[in-house]
View 1 (cartoon, rainbow, N blue to C red):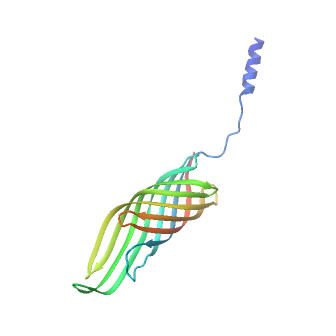
View 2 (cartoon, helix red, strand yellow):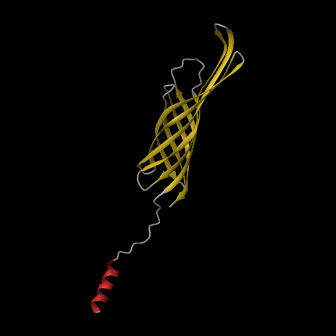
View 3 (cartoon, helix red, strand yellow):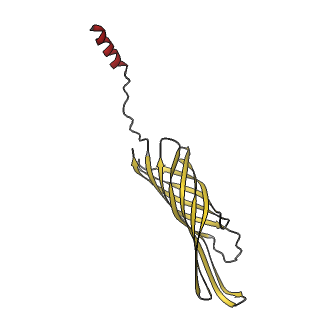
Length: 193
């Protein structure tokens, strides 16, 4: 009987007791980015405006590992052009055109330093063209596969809110053009468990 008591005391005293860790292992975050984009193309129009606005919306699942996965969409203004009195074989006309894209991507990010992440994604771009030629509206839509990569920095303001910046390079396979964007990013932790 005495041996059983000693074994029970030894067993209970040998069980390690740890304080509960307050850090969470998993988070689900939303990231919203707004900023400037620059389009790089082989089109050669003197009045081609390759500067525009870009926006990103991303939902990311962040496990305890360095790699995070999620979905991304957004808006990238690619170019616009306006030509007055354009000479064509059918006569002179005013011409205008613009293009923007909406990506639907699977996104990955990897932490490489405190508050610094590498970004990558791949999926499809919906390309929307609008314009006017001989006073007739022009519209077309096409789909292109594409990819992007970049780097981001975020500074935590609270446990759930961070702000920062992001530099991103995008490539459109169908039109074989590129885009670079620089964005201000707002990040919010939706869930933590």
